[in-house]
Length: 109
Image 1 (cartoon, rainbow, N blue to C red):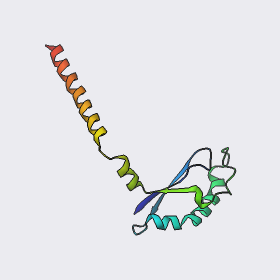
Image 2: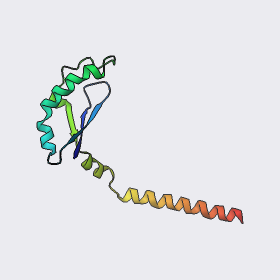
Image 3: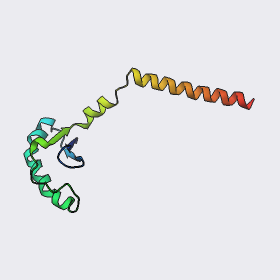
Image 4: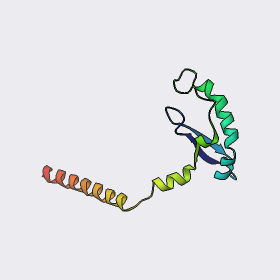
């Protein structure tokens, strides 16, 4: 299965995101082509999901341009890149832990 995150970031007072699970052969382009149908499905579901929530009254004006589609695998690879800053953080953390252990051992003596 392939997972996609479909987000409506600017239309409502609070960003709305939905997880979309599709069969393996689907690509991001297939999901982009599916946007008009997705608009129809989400527009019909919003009145029931957010009956008494303010700011969700303008449900019928959704259009495919409001939807942003993210591929979590790609986003996670970008967010979890181990670079120089990450290496420096690990080294500094290890140094602080070592200093704490050594100072504790000295204080016990």
